[in-house]
Length: 602
Image (cartoon, rainbow, N blue to C red; front, side, top):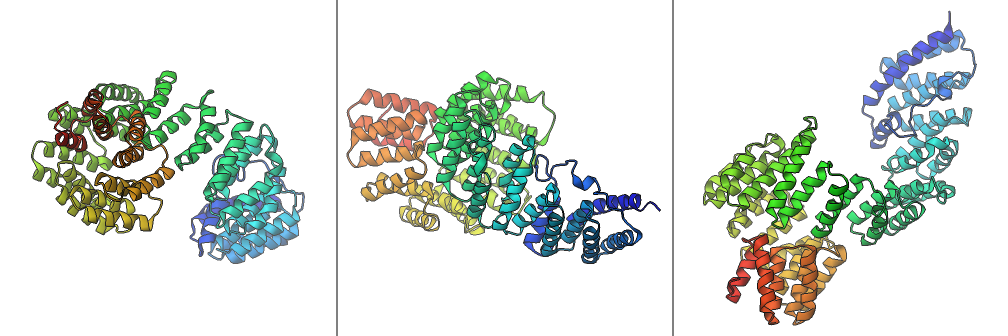
């Protein structure tokens, strides 16, 4: 009998059965993760890449009948639901034959037996028998990391980096943050990886990837200072490195303003359009609309067929009241999407475009056209958004009861849908000035998710609109008690105090603290300008408000800036800025109330 050929058959069977083993739920969280991470082979992960290794080639040991019978018993035991016995038999056969394929199979059986300790024992036995085996080392490394024995992973990590072919090393280094993502002590994981990469950090080719990996791991550990330093080192080695640029973007998104010059260095060369697009999104989310628009202008000029840029460009134009430009950008976006296959992302993107076209038509007073755009939406996942827009159109025509009924009639598709419907109804009521009702509906949404700080913040804003400043302050202080870094709550409380002309020193301190978390947010800058005005510092207030309006042309900022100019006797400039505010949003309540209070007709 050809025992060697028969063994190949059983090993093939064993490899197939491993897929079943992976699907078996393990007893502990660590073991569960270990099966998923150690046995899976994600694309691009060099720790698990498909390579021709020693496992595919026997070391020449002959398998006698006794060994073959042991293999047969091991596989049968595993197949019959006793992987522990199968593992023991397979490991014994591996030790006696020194065959790397049997060590691999023994390790896989240990995973199937739900025993992290057994898997670790098998991997260590494998590595001891074959010290230069990359496969043994990679299994050992993954198992140690997954069961949170991070310090012990240092040696196999260093060996993996040493054994990796030069062509694979950068990919291996980039995969390390994913490998250590589940580490319980992320700071320790960063230190272990830093030590392993020490000799690569200054290398002109490998160095940028090494620094980016360290930056990602430091950021995951909450060490923003070291993450920023790592990003700087990567950019210094290679200003064109895409990974370094993405790390800088992550830092900027985490509100680390010092990362922006690093990104500027990358953007000044030939950046990936996806990176510039991501930067524009971060700027837009920070309400730095003019800066975001600059990036989009560059992107659509360099890459006119990049659809996402046109969609975001339309959104920015719409936000500042440039309806014609928003409409044109959306038309360009939909034209570009026509050549793409009918996928789920394409359908979602078109839904966003139709929603924006509906808003444009509504702002023009063409309610029939607005309804026509909404009628094009086929995405069931966006039903609530579409119905909310239809409800807003009805409310604008004085049909509030019908509008509320439309939102309430949206079917529930998930556990959060009831809360989302209440939020949509509260926003509808707020938009039509029914502030007390909006507050009451929002209170019901908060009751469904009492720990959600954003819901509580929205309730506070509706309390303020309903003329209940004490309740607003109570709610905002509750948000800040839970999360002292909630810059929106800090700003809202500070602005409310300033607007009412009370406790102005405290108001300024709150706003300044909010700016520490979001230093370039134009709405918070607007609040600072307003509190300076209330404190009597008119020239300083004007300077601050001009900066905020240049960053974000907004009707509310225009209201405040115009009032400062009016108080300073610069009446023509005040009228001009108020007219610009009305062009942006003629329905803004702050601006309209300001003009009414001052008796001005711009």
